[in-house]
Length: 451
Image (tube, rainbow, N blue to C red; front, top):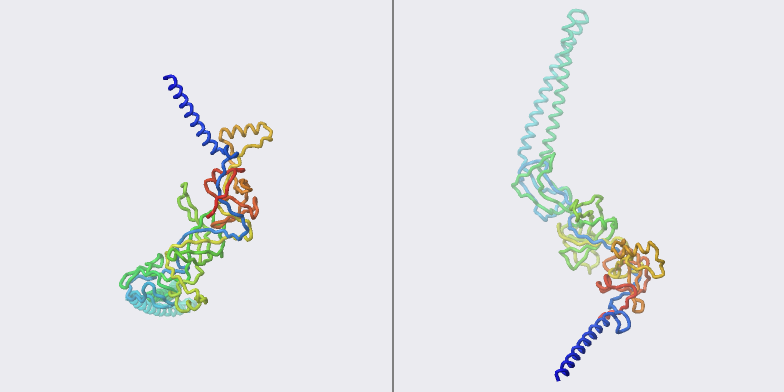
């Protein structure tokens, strides 16, 4: 009886081991594709390569500022006794902005006028002395010619006459110097009255009536205010060195301001810097950018620009009644339209991936020579040179076929294919994990149904 129980236990153990082995073999067979006669199919997404017009976009961020902004600084120092504008006011060329206390400059003019009169009196005195010396010289010359006076006396009268003529010329020069100082003082008095150099809006006011300002000819004086053409705004952006080669003057742009998230505006590239702004010099994350200025061509800030600008810039289409009001310092995103290719083969950007062709095994028909053996040795040791190329996988009756492609320009969604595939090809676009890592030439695929 005990022997029968022992045999039964052994049989149960053997049966359990067999069942476990069958389960393991079944799982392996399922994933290896043995059960359906081939490798497991990969589920992918596809899209048809089409002919379309594609425009390359260079994106950048920056800030809005006036194209023309004049900083008003005083040429003379003093106290502001009259301030006729406030921030946001629209002013016209020649309009009075402020006055600086003129008392010191009026007193300086009075002082220089008195000095000028003194110099003129001295000049008349020098003229009289010169005439007297001339008379004495002519008399002594006549006596010397008759040999009635010695040579020494004659030379003394001659030297005195020449000296008095020099004194008269010096007096004349001193008068010219006094006149120049007087003109300068009068100019400084005029500079106490500051007027607008052009039409524009007071975009910044940094002083108040009663404050003292500093003005010097050699250095920049106190910044009092800024006058800007608010209806002529621009966006200043930094473009990376890799993209700047694609940007040209007069390229059109699409501008999106953070202040107007649901609207876009038009612009045009007006200036591209020739010198770079380098940050992080000498570091691994060094960045080289070039400043690009983009004029906002969509009419804006018309209520700040005077009635004549409203008449000139307002859109004639009654359906377009929105006019943005931009302020200096606003953030903006810019898409610069650089190159355009028309009627070219395009595919989604994500369809293009890279493969290392150096990892491809050599064909069986290739003769085994020393070079092949060396490459095999390098491949086994992991030191073979990499050969990365751009490729696209195409669905051909349920099989993924790899094609090396040459690409051109791209926009935010599509990229131009210059060679490798033709329009109408069904290219594999995803998923990213399968396309970038797992998919190989000849793999079986199924198309994921798109709801």
